[in-house]
Image (cartoon, rainbow, N blue to C red; front, side, top):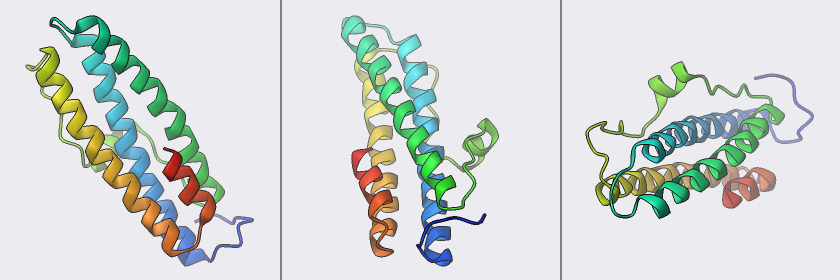
Length: 141
């Protein structure tokens, strides 16, 4: 951990920053899977789902930046490299052979659910340490 102007104790900042990095890694992995689905989706619902997936990807990037910056504010290091994502993401790989609209969207939906669970866990850690700013950030995400 790096020095921080935060008045949150070091042990709490360490735990919160670690959870923020877990959330960051999973959200970045989700972003890449959503963009891959956006590029490859086929089927009767192509137009609406292609647009929806692009909107989701845009939203994901916005809050990953906020999550990373919060980890750094707390004195942590934001690690969003592709190597870290490949090594530490808890999301299942997106199978390349599934491109039909409904089956592919079902896979994306399950990954969104898994990412939300990671965000909720990180928020619980922030709540336990009375870090209202991080809790609010994660609630917004």
